[in-house]
Every structure is written in structure tokens, then in C-alpha cells.
Amino acid sequence: RLESQIVRDSILSLAGTLDLTMGGPPVPAAKQADSTRRSLYFFHSNNQRDLFLTMFDEALVTDCYRREQSVVPQQALALTNSKLVLTASQQIAQRLSLDAESQHDFIEKSFTTLLCIPADETELAACEAALTTWESQPGGTPEQARAHLIWVLLNHNDFVTLR
Image 1 (cartoon, rainbow, N blue to C red):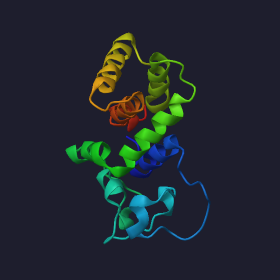
Image 2 (tube, helix red, strand yellow):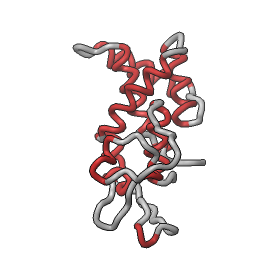
Image 3 (cartoon, rainbow, N blue to C red):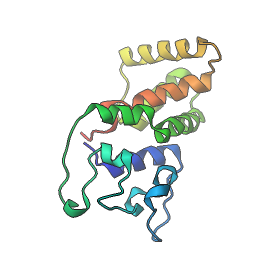
Image 4 (cartoon, rainbow, N blue to C red):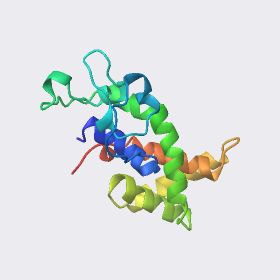
């Protein structure tokens, strides 16, 4: 499974908002939730830790070379409810929609970009049905439906797993 910093930085990178500036002062704990800096630049201490990174087994300050690997429900909740993921899913959907000529193209591009696997026929059909359903909801738009699909794929196990 990917390390906590890589999960966070991958989400920001896919959204096109990851700040790649090298060097500089560490990001204080109070500003980490809204920061787009690489997680490498976060200030770490035993008392103040980023909640999102902690959910995905961030290394302790005293044991930075050793990471625990756990699979707990809170990880799914963090990917489902965090402001980071909800905002990024809209931005990623906008970026992937730029060269997608159809829903089919958007779905294929989403699978290969986020999960690094091609979507099979069953997945394509299920995603097309989901997009149609989300668009038909009151106030639903194609943009919102695509953001929902990206949000679902960010919650997929293959997003946080390197095979």
C-alpha cells in the first residue's frame, strides 16, 4: 500500500494543484489541511500530526524508518469525506474532461489515470449507468456526475495500492 504522503501528494498532483516548489520552511500543523505543498515539507511532531496522513499510517517522528500498515474503516472515511478529496475530485474531473470526447472516453481515461488499469466492459457499463443516474438527479449536471465518478475511483483500493 502507498505511504500516507504519497496518497495525499498523488491526489493533489492529479488535481493539478500540487506545489512542487523545492526548499523553504516547513508547513506548520495549523496550515497543513489547506496546504498544497508536498507532504515532505510538513512539520512533524509527536503532539501535532496531520489527521489525513495519520489515518494512512504516517511514520512516527521517533520511528521514521518503520511504518505500520493497517487497513481500518477510518481510511475509507478519510478518502470519502475529506475536504482534500472532495475538492480534488472536481478538479481531476475537469482536467480529464478536457480531451474526453464522450462519457466512454472519460471513463477509460479515469481508470487508466487514477487506477493504472483499463476498465473492462462490465466496469464501463456500470460507470456509464452511474453517470446517467447522477446526471438525472435533481440539480445534477454532467460535471457533477463526472466528479462523483472520480470521487468513487479515489476510494478504490487500487488507488492506494501499488501492484
